[in-house]
Image (cartoon, rainbow, N blue to C red):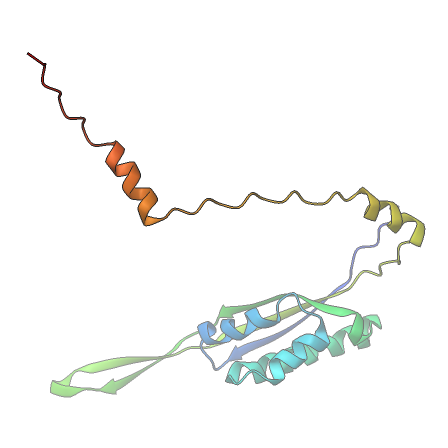
Length: 169
């Protein structure tokens, strides 16, 4: 058996949510990779309808972690959030000259995966000191030369063809 412990994953899913997956993905990107308290704060101040639904799914995942694995909310972070398209309800609307316009009422499936953050032991003070000494200061860059209008005129004057000298008689 290896001594490395794999982190436990907890998942929650909301299916057939009556919302466009494209709109829900915009909010899902905001919480990906954040800790659970930070993700809750982001969702609380996001003014989109999808934020409320994602908040419920996040709460469900946290409840699953606490009830099934005994993991505290503070030790969890959002490993993945993704929104998949669900079935599309097709409706129609009458238009001019007897024509029909199709209306697509989209649905989506929202999934949130949480993982327990690994416990990191604080490094000893003795180990940190040599690392600071080993860093060398970065070399300074030389200042770039400024080109002025008079300088550019001198260059263009030197590129002109030389006048031919007439032979003296």
